[in-house]
Image (cartoon, rainbow, N blue to C red; front, top):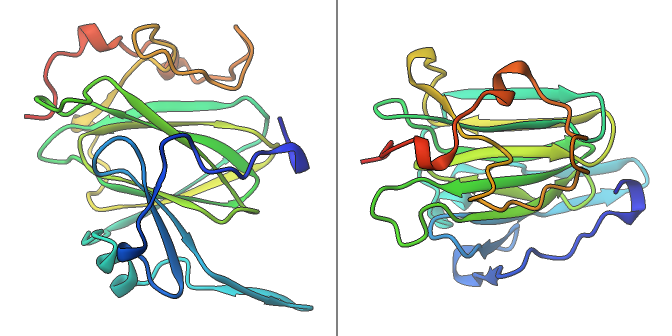
Length: 208
């Protein structure tokens, strides 16, 4: 899956939330409470385009009242690179605002909140330089993505700095999660770290 064949359809279960949006920002709620898909407006002409990729007041109006402290930027050279599923535990739990300035990925969040009626469930969306969408993932979720185009870049803001002592992971291919990753069996390009992540049943409570 790459190039012009990428679907720009909204993910299943996305619900328009015009009351959260503005003239410059479209917002959809995803099926897991707290997850938001956002699309800032782009204004283009023969020179290119301009976009307010993040605007504090617009995103605050959407319910994202986070104080971002760090920007993370990754490059994945190959199609089929899977990074994740990653999260940090309290007191360093992170909310993430994820976007793709170049290329395309399938971005996934898994609910790990104790007591949540959707714990262990996932939601995903295609984020690309073409559709210009972003995913807001509040604390309490694991996050990961799979590249759909070569040389894909992922840029995300976080509201807590990296903390090695709080860094945790979840097996991307845990059958209990049932995530339909867009790579064939055995075709994912993984780090050694992500090959060894525990399954959901072995995690125990990690978010209160």
